[in-house]
Image (cartoon, rainbow, N blue to C red; front, side, top):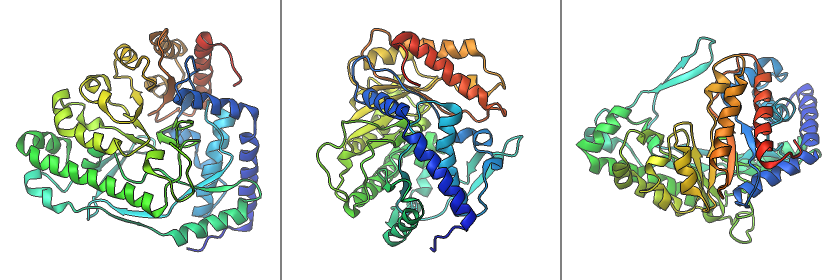
Length: 428
């Protein structure tokens, strides 16, 4: 692929890069780095950071009207710069503006040996919102054999060509850095969903548990093979800084890497990874522990630190399963989770209480119900009072601000005020 930008787009993007670099150099960014680091390192008494994930409400946060570039590659770069700039200038949450221009390896991945069709759906404003997989397996007893082991690869030449282009264009403003995750998909039950419906999945638990174990094992082995392949290929880059493992939960920590590493020789044990199992919310803790958890445990053993969960409640499977997950470092505490139970369970363990405030309070109405928002933040702070549990607030799954971005900034201000009430003021 030939990388090129029209002269006017190049100059516009360089201007944005300079603005990002200016924001990244502000003293408050070092304060925020320290917040995330102390939280992930479980420093006693550390102050919780607060961040809002924006991509779900890009209709408001990144509308087409803010773009100037016309080419696809120019708009891709423009979106990267603008998102960081707007986080700092509009939201002013604890997002740390990057001081590097990040890119990824050019990899490819055929997960099942065939493509799965997807039917999309738009909401009343014409924004893509829902989707439905055209699942090929309607009965796992008959459909197991169609799924093949994953194949994958990397185009290092093309990756380095893009890196060279970016360095020639922006390298005098900020460094260009190749970043990576762990490459294998550790969200096992999520990866079942393109293959079968929830109904088919739940029936398989009773009709053919052996085949369900088999396909979960295949998906687990796919992830293991791809992760180990990435390590062997030298694709892994330690993700212990301004990277995320689950949504907008930042990875800053001194706990990784486990020892000194050289570029191209990073191990999986030096990396953060994430996993969840939202699809098993309707499964008993006994079934989850017997059928599903062993596959996740085998995956978790490979990594340095593991973030567990998304929207599913953690407390029903904590005692039997999650408490035994190798290398567990953070647990998602969604609005469906018993906060008091998990506060007791995590006390003194150095595991992050990754609180997801109620997104409906921010996304449903045009105006923010300030009293309800304060109460939601305060409930978590009061629940953890007197306990040695590192805490972060990460707002996710807000799909519209109804054109009122000021509501998001106000939510940040109110949350900070509640945090200040407990931890005292700091630089914002």
